Length: 166
Image 1 (cartoon, rainbow, N blue to C red):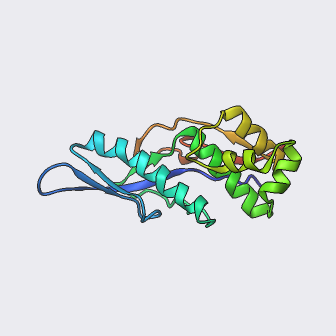
Image 2 (cartoon, rainbow, N blue to C red):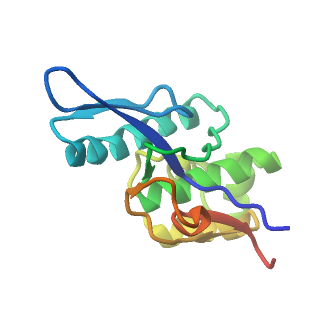
């Protein structure tokens, strides 16, 4: 069986009395934002989601699993590089692999691996993909656009994590 982790989360857009929309995420309560219109609110939602998920990494907590969107919710995906870093962080946690151990596998210093796991640090996607391979994972990308829900095929609409060789 394939293990997959998506980084696409449903959000609730609530119209505000003074205009615009307030955005919240049922699965990531720390991710709150808004915008003057629906398009701006959804664009801001991507940044708020990425920042909130980055805090889970900094606090060494599990990344919340996205729930299935219900009617009226929109889906928001994190940027591709953030999804790759979250996938690496999650794989390392699940397998009990320390940053020092991964650094040894990759022939890098621990500081370099710390940067690879930090969603706020700029990294080259190929470097993160190499680290994912070192923990037996690969990054599978699909359409990561902000989508209206319910999605027709959720697993194809996000960055997913699959075990290598399956």
